[in-house]
Image (cartoon, rainbow, N blue to C red):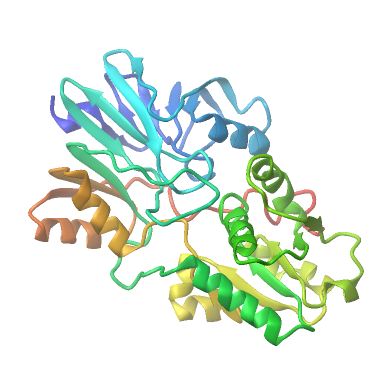
Length: 344
C-alpha cells in the first residue's frame, strides 16, 4: 500500500479512506479521531469522535455534552480496528490527553503527530517515540531561530521579578488548556507555595487538571481586594493582558508564556514586559531530532513553517512534502475573552 492510499490530505483534514475516518478534521465529518483538546484540532459537530478519555472530557468542558453524536475513549497503546486499518494512540507530550495517531495497514505504518513536544511537562504523559514508515509532523516552530530552552529557568525569571518588585502584581498570559496548568505546576515545583490567582476563564479546565495534578492554592481574582493582590501572581488568557480586567491589580507587570516570546518583536507587539519562553510545542531541534529518530523514510509537514522543515528533510535525503491544510495554527482561546467570566 502506498502512503497516499492510506492517508489523503483533503480540505476537511487528513482522511483515511480504507478506515473511514478523518484525523483532526477542520469541518464536521462522520467519524473523527482527535489528537488533543485545542480548538484548532478538536471541533464539535462530528458524528463520532474517538480520542483519549482526557481529550473527550476536555471537549465536553469546552463544548457541552452534545459536542458529537457519540464518543469512544481509547487508551494509549490500545489497538482498535476500523475496517481494514489498525489505529493506536501514543502520548504526544503536548497537553493532558494529547496523542499521536498511528495508522497501520498492509505493513505500512504512518504516524500523525498532532501537536507535540519532547520536553518534560509535569501535567501530561511524556512524548513517546513511535517508529514508522511515514511521519506526519507539525511545524509550529519549524525555523532554526526557535530554541525554547529550560522552562524551569523561565519560571525562575518570573519569581526573580516578583521578588524584585514586591509591590507589583505579575499577570501571566497563558493559554487556557495546557499552558496555564503547566505554568502552575512549574511554579509549585520551584517552591512557590503562595496562593495563585486565576482569571475566571481558566477556572473550569484548571479545576479538571487539579483532580489528578497537585496545583496548590488557587483563587479566583473576583472579590479579592486590590491591595491584597500586590506581589501576587495571576494567570489569565493572553487576550486579557490588554483588557480592563487588568485594572483590578496594583501596578500590574505583564508576562506572557509562549514559544513566540523568543521573538522580541512579538513581545513588544503585545506590550509584554516579561517574556517567558515556555512552549508546549517542539522547537527546531526537537522537531528535527524527532523526525530522525522515528526512522521514517518519508515526512509530511503540516501547520507551521512547512517549507523550512521540508527543506531540512531534503538535505537529509528524506522524501518530504508540505500538506498545506488550512485551519490549524497556534491554539486559540475559546474560553477567553468571550467567556461568561471573562471580566472576573
